[in-house]
Image 1 (cartoon, rainbow, N blue to C red):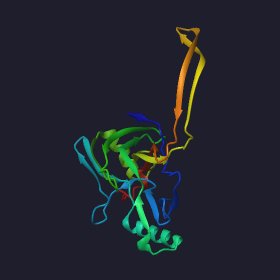
Image 2: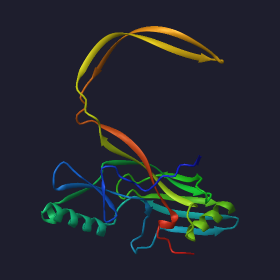
Image 3: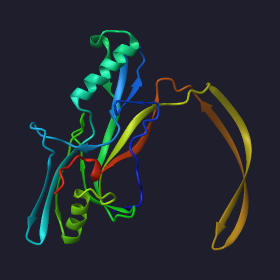
Image 4: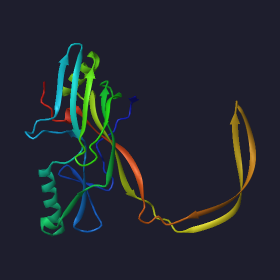
Length: 232
């Protein structure tokens, strides 16, 4: 699958950036929601980035684990800042993961000029920090591009998450109408156009959608140059 799409870091509509974390107020003064601004690679218990690149004859084995989450220490600092802003003890400040669903997670291989193709895809763990593991065999050309990415060159490798977040729907008044409507329909087929008149009787009902939410999906990504990898 190819894609010339160039997703940016999460702008987080309705969120503010605090210490590199996107935060938004909840329905109470002491409740806030957070989400990561961009994905990155996970680390193990010793703080090492979970990433492996091993030559295997004409092929190269590439394994890594992505994540879309926030470090505990960073969350603690954000919680303290928000508690100070609200004038309450830190223990009374609720900082919760944003209500989102993480869909497909992809590794995107670039051409260095803004074009990308999907190198691999997987599903996340389904809960923060949404770990996503990849294990891919690379041919010579793919391995060469990945190595360029590891050397710090941008545009060769991206980690991309599909995020579906809930946004409040627009509330509308409840109305019911019943009308006869004359509709002019223009049809075009085989280079010829013909017009047809239709008479429709429609009954339209619109109701207030309080409490309902409209799903919005976006892609957030991070270039390999921002993964914090040690240079080869």
